[in-house]
Amino acid sequence: MTGHSAAPPGPGAVLAPGPAREEWCLACKAWTRAAGVVLLLTPEGVTRAGTWAWCDTCDPTDWRLDHGR
Ligand SMILES: [Zn+2]
Image 1 (cartoon, rainbow, N blue to C red):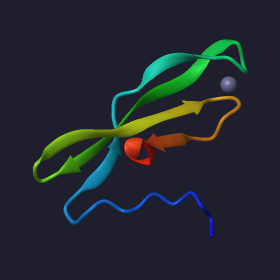
Image 2 (cartoon, rainbow, N blue to C red):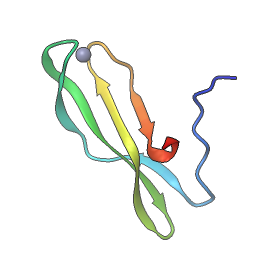
Image 3 (tube, helix red, strand yellow):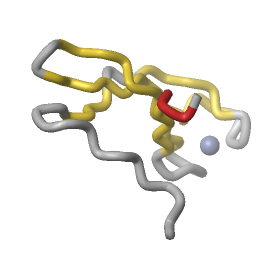
Image 4 (spheres, protein in one colour):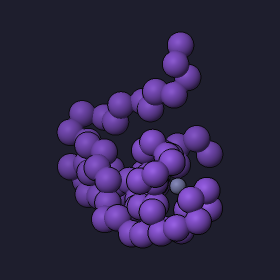
């Protein structure tokens, strides 16, 4: 049990990271963090599935899907 597996989207749907923007990293105290939305591409259209963030220096990629709440 990893406890961190996102349920795969339905057939024909694909998760894709949206455009990145620079963010301030509190840990690094620098503009080293990139963040954006996670888009869910489906045959019906594009919806916002969550957010992602990644810091060049201190963080692995962090995907957060909105499904949890
Ligand atoms: Zn950082």
